[in-house]
Amino acid sequence: MIASTIAAYLAAHWLEAAGFLATWIGIWLTTRRTLLCWPVVLAADLLYLFVFYHARLLSDALLQLFFVAFTLYGWWHWWQGVREEGEVRVVPLDKRSLLLALLAGAVGSFLLGQLARQLHAALPFLDATLTSYSLVASWWQARKHTANWWLWILVDLVYIGEYLYKDLWLTALLYAGLIGLAVLGLRDWNRASQSAPAAAA
Image (cartoon, rainbow, N blue to C red; front, side, top):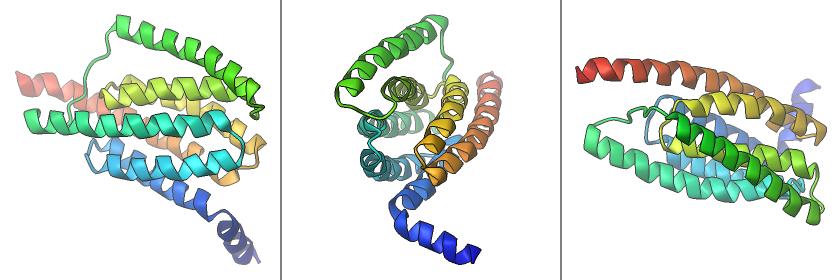
């Protein structure tokens, strides 16, 4: 009975299931700081573009387009780092850049919220805020800043509630798992940043 219910759900939500799997694998590979994460994450971006558009979460759908651009940039930037340094090295985030990025997230939240409301999107301002700060986290990730994991933990916690409200149960489960991966990434990237000065010395 349970198996047939699960099979029926997956058959009806196969696109979401594929996005779930691609996202999980891509983020796990990101915690390991391997270049292979980027093509997997790119596939996840495209899959969730269709999932969110269908659910009328228009800010989230728009976010996936930005994610595609950031993914391509991150792939290139990490590849450059590997070519020059032999590995993906964690880069410190200075206070000025931190404050500017958080301010940009606030401005983006307001502007996207206004646009989403005009388009009659579901949960326009909440979705816009999550979208805006997801872009900040993605930028930090592409730039190899450990702070990206802290922001992802916060954003993903709120996303879980939003997706449960929109009956995207599989995606809500995914984001609960992504919090665990973000904690793993935070731990591993912190270790990498601490070992880098010792290696340089």
